[in-house]
Image (cartoon, rainbow, N blue to C red):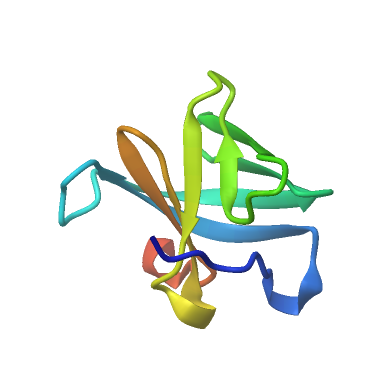
Length: 106
């Protein structure tokens, strides 16, 4: 397992981003959404523009490990470098990317 530190661009607590949703085992996203990522005292929320909301609370003493609202494990993974971060859940992975230009209207 590879753990990543949690860092937001420009050291903000709230940042606009793009969320690509990958079902477990998929190599292409099932959806791409504008989203807002928020971090406060180790807690992470992701609020997608389509109304889906994720709330992750930290696991004590376990960097990069969280629990979701159903008390299921969530792991923060590396792999995007400065481009964003990945949250792996039991049924999907959420790729949070700082570049939202892919979703821009032509």
